[in-house]
Image (tube, rainbow, N blue to C red; front, side, top):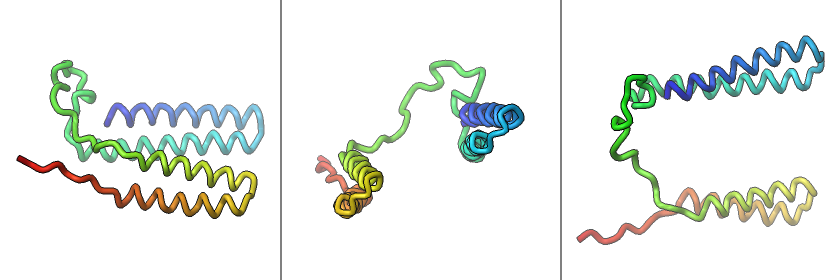
Length: 132
């Protein structure tokens, strides 16, 4: 995770420098605030990755002397597929459309669908196949 944190720290430095140059040259507060906030968000993500990298064991990506074969083997556990994220995204999009056009009826329907989809995502379970 050290590589990822370094990437976000470079992005943070870039946006802070650009924000300072933009503030001096443009004297426009909204763009300056946006650039500083973007740098701050990159700082938060980079700091989180740096914090997490201290707790994890070193990965082959973090070792400059690593070989390709060091990364061989199981990568990790990936949960089985689920259709609930599609339902959450679709209902959230309907909520956005309802807010954009301020259709109260659409907000109510989309809100109920969103609650159902989030509930389905949180409380879904998978039937394990019988072990032989």
